[in-house]
Image (cartoon, rainbow, N blue to C red):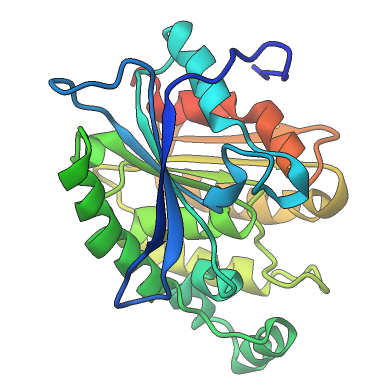
Length: 284
């Protein structure tokens, strides 16, 4: 199912903006919290944490002037009773986006030569472990204290696109008692923007072999398009899919989708956003 802009409901609920949220692990950044229509004391809500938060709700802050329109898509899905009412926490990125979204333990499994090449291209190292400590140890406790959340693993999810897809997967596997599922949209497996090599994907294969739980499996959603940068991803995703199958993941816990003609941009992600949202948040 795809939701076009025509099919989406008018956004409801409200967004609360938390400017310069402080951290001892990473530099401060803005956080947006979307509260669904009817949000009120006495009811508890699942929570979806999303990366690149400035791209989620408003075209004014979004890259390229196109937002995911998460509020509109969720409004429609909730009206159609396909997902429950939920809270969305949009974590804005920082100038260190690449470093914060690069899975650290997997990055360290690459050859020293390949690590050096990525560091030179991107002018940074991985800071993902510190970023996830910010999310899990600082931001999530604040959200659970100040909002009507269902804080358990079963009702806590994480999601992002491109590098945000990588850090979402990493979050679910590093913190399996915190996150019950991850949405990984147009996951940027190569890390590099210059060369489409399998080095990091193979490092992730090693990492997954160590970290994928056989019990209490997280729900894992992956997808990719076939245009622009997304045209790189299919062989990488197929390699990752083979590891998931080998570890006993099936349709209850895992879904990979291919979207013909979809490009690597917010407009494409907006069009298919309902698919991962329904997989993660819908009836189990």
